[in-house]
Length: 204
Image 1 (cartoon, rainbow, N blue to C red):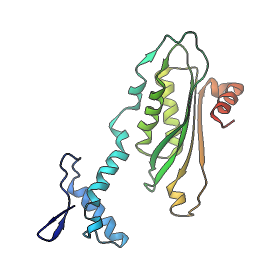
Image 2 (cartoon, one colour):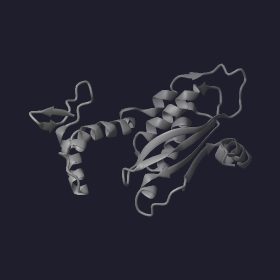
Image 3 (cartoon, one colour):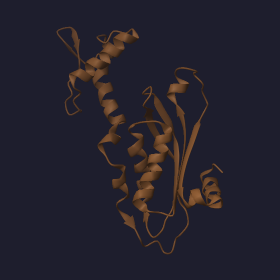
């Protein structure tokens, strides 16, 4: 925020991401519709901040999550058991109300002859989470990406999250988690394998 000749004026972007005026005006329109004054001191810089925040929230549109699975390792010393990354925190937004989705994801796969660095699984999650989402699609997209690019024997993804469209509006119900799962390959075809991997994830 800057003050010039006694008037409050929006801050200049400097090295920050520039936000188009049409985007800022859209935010001002929402602020007015909500009943506030976008020209008051506390809100004068909000349109630009909000625009940059949304660009960051939706940064997943600027990347292909599959690129994180391109570098794999074949020397696994005979390891042929489940690889699991459990309870990875994530933050997304629902496409219906633009409300936050906050939760954790557990991602597992049974490798064939190659594995990927474990941090890459989290990057795949965040690549899809940083788009407008519904939880069911997010779960399926992560599983399909790993299935298509690593060609494992099986993939399992379980997501547990709370939804701002339920906690902050509408029924305003707190303390409720939504759980979704997607299993492919041996985890879908073999009940005992499915039971084992879900138990490892803490959902068995």
